[in-house]
Length: 134
Image (cartoon, rainbow, N blue to C red; front, side, top):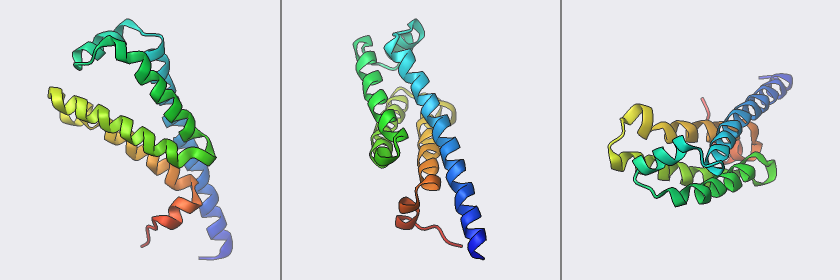
């Protein structure tokens, strides 16, 4: 690989990572907005999942802080760790009530893969810490 190929690859990876980060960030922000607005569908779903409706705003605030930390480059790894914990709770909640595996229970895993994949693509230090080689 020539040095220009490496720079081109690095640039492509970084921009792809920022694009994925934007998608994850927008998805999480939409979830935050729905929770903080206490939309009826959110309250109904919360009860169906076995949680009291009084937890919706606090979960929305936790998600807001975690998402903000994730999209800020200097705190993105901390944000990714916090979002992973949040998504793990979602997976556990769906597993506990017997939700469909691939569409509901594992959805948090899919989002987690996207958020860590985006971070991996845009963060040179993370790629050096967890190298993937051929």
